[in-house]
Image 1 (tube, rainbow, N blue to C red):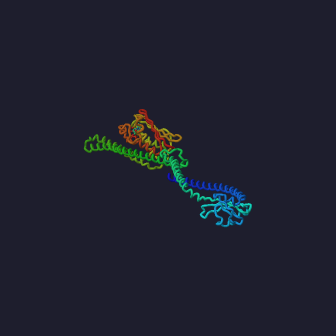
Image 2 (cartoon, protein in one colour):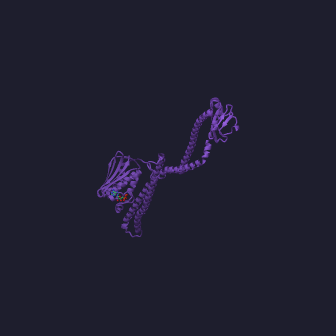
Image 3 (cartoon, rainbow, N blue to C red):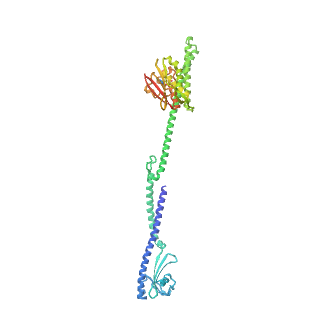
Length: 448
Ligand code: ADP
């Protein structure tokens, strides 16, 4: 681009120079011709007066600088200030002589054979019928140029050098704002308005690249996070599966080796059944979670929260009454777009926790309510509550505030994780309010 700009400027400068040169030569030529012609005219008038009065003697007294030719009315050359008249041919046919003889005044221009010299003639008829003619020779433009070749060459070289220098400086001036353009921090106003569309395009592309870079970084981060989660999950699952299995194996071994008294047999069988049940619940929860992780699209359908809550409360009532816990359902029918199995899962896990982490004689209340934009399902209990420090983590997989209490009540540490996943599957939000010793309220907000 730099060399192209340089060449263009240089070429333009050269063209202008050449045009100026031609114009100056032709103006000078016209001007000097005019001046010479005027001089010729006045000197002819003056000489005609001299010849009228002094005749041949006047002409013979002139020097050779001025060429004067005296021609008789029949064309015979009577006298010439430069040539021998005996050698000169008859001038009757000369244009300027003919014109002077008929009109009194004549003029003509003739070129030499090589066209390098031009001769201008002026003639005037004297009172005795003869004609006095004067002439001057001029070099033509070509001859002038050739004569000035050396000077022209010097001027051309100087002009060439100046043009090159100017072209170089101009190119630099044009290019330097472009060279100094910081592509990382593009200016709001470009150095040249013509660059505006290009800059806008580059800015747009840069924004797009930045966006994609950020998306990639986010993706990488979330993949790393997912990978970390997967590792932790695998480690946790192995551990959680191992504990009940070891307990089952231990009890079975004792029975197998006859180390259990007949009266203790049913207690050991009960332990095996309880641990097996825990194992089964755990495996079911894991299958459930991994299915939710797949994010397989399921068809949403209208689900009546109130009806599902009624059924789940009924199924939990036996366990609740074992601990003297009251289960209440408030509100009325409210239909949301959801997946019945997931809604059931949410209500079951929240109510189950409300019962598990409650005091003897406590209360669990399920409320179904509606606002203009949402349908709310909230489960409140009067239980042990969750300390502030744990509140942001209880939705993580296998996270428990009190591990022993969770295990004692058959918890897997996956219940709230399933609730969170199921809710997000149905585009519902979850909020938690809890205070230790007061109780917990978890609210799921379904979009209408
Ligand atoms: P778990 O199977 O252990 O109940 P969850 O995922 O359902 O697992 O709950 C995670 C932890 O959050 C529980 O172990 C418990 O410490 C705490 N938690 C959940 N719900 C309640 C609640 N209603 N009251 C007090 N603590 C709760």
